[in-house]
Structures are given as structure tokens and as C-alpha cells.
Length: 323
Image (cartoon, rainbow, N blue to C red):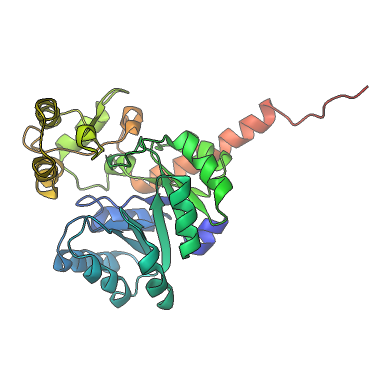
């Protein structure tokens, strides 16, 4: 068990990304029960909705769960912060904003803080503010992304070198090879989103899952780049409409409206891919089946272990001969 697992009291170094409208009770419980960290993403949901999800979760699992609060996205930031303490959660994930002002409050109540960052500077500031864990997310990831557009492969080793707290890699990870690669780069674990949507435990619409299963390496697209609001989504008729509007010069407020949680629900929950969008990361091209979360995690751990073994066998450490 590594430092991350001990800190968060989980079996496997695998975290669920805080996906609004997707990180619901059944999926989050499945992640925690399988040995990872189930995470509920509040998105723009109202307080009553989130409270209901947490209550449902606690009826399913007694294992650790986290609440992800996108600080500059949710209109109920302060209420969500208080909810973490009232519901006696042991872990909170803070993204889409500066976590520094809120970390002392959580620590006062014994809550571990995960800070999601996209640059070395952000990671250093989060650690200085007291973050217990850093999630470093490359722009391979689904959904709202940093305008820096830094890749996971290059971001992780730089942040690992810059901070002393455990670093979790996010973006582009969906199997044991990705887990092994990120651990080799110095990360203490991984965070996944898209891969968990494509599981038997995910209650997302069949059309969403089928889109992921049928994806190739070029099946995602960035929308919002023209107005500095980068979001990675699956190529669907609705995504095509967004790109067409961007080409014509869409206003920021119109873009925000058309990529709001309302249209996300239409795509992800109702499966109307011509009327709403579905988030998806570049890892979607690697998804070919719908395992249970438990089977996925066990397979990932076995595959990562095998990769390490094979590498140590194929490339044994040798000393350079001296004359």
C-alpha cells in the first residue's frame, strides 16, 4: 500500500473523477466498493440533489467517498463546502478555482483535501496552501480543461518534481498500462472518468456507452477554444453544431448556455446526441468492453504488475563496464 492509499484509506490507487451528473450514487459506490475512491461531482446541482446522492451512497457503502466541488462552476459553493462537514465526509476534491481559502476550514474538521491542477505553478500553490493530494490533469481528459493544454505525459513528472505530497495523474488513463506508466513517472495513483462511464455499473444512457465503445483515436474534439473555454467532448451531431457556431463567431454567454449541465443531461442521461453533448476523453479510443468497476480495477492492477515484471525481466539493471 502506497502513501496515497494510506492517506485516503483505499485499497487501490485509483480515484474517480468528479463528473457532474455522471458521478452519481450507483457508480460512485461501485468505485468505492471496488477499492478505489468514489467521488460525487456536484457540477451545478442544487444542494438537495447532492444531499440525496450522498444519503443513497451511504446506504450502499461504508467505504470512503469524496465530494468534488468545482469552485467557480457551482452556484452553491459555500453550501457545498458546509455539506462536506455536515455529512462527515473524510475527503473533498476542489477543482476549477483557487482552493487556498477553503483548505484551513476543511482541515479544522479533519477533511483531507485533494486539489486539481493543470500546471506546476498551481501545484506548488496548492501544496503551500495545505493540499493533501494533488491531481494533475492533462488535456487528454474529458470535459472542462485548462487552456494550457498540457499533456499528462509531460505534466506529471514536472509536478512530481515540484511538490512533496502525493500526485495523482488524470487524463488519458484507462487500463493497467496507463496506471503503470503514471506510477513510473512518479505519480502515486491515477484518476479516471471516461473509462468509468463505460462500465456495467454506470447508469449512463446506452447511446453514451455505445459512442464510447465505437470510438477510435480521433473520436473526441475540443470545443470552446475560440473563446478560451476549452472542453473535450465526443464527436456527435450536437458537438458539430457547437463547432459550426464557433466558426461563425459565437458569444461567450451563448457558448456557456449551450454547454451547460442542462444540455449535458440531455446527451448523457437521455441519449439525445443531436440535442445535447457528452464529455469524453482521448482514452475513449481504447475502450472496447463494459466490465464491472471491480473487474476493471482488478484487471488494471494485474496488468500494471505484469508490466513492471516484464520490464524488469527484459531490461535488467546492469552496471557499465569500466576499464
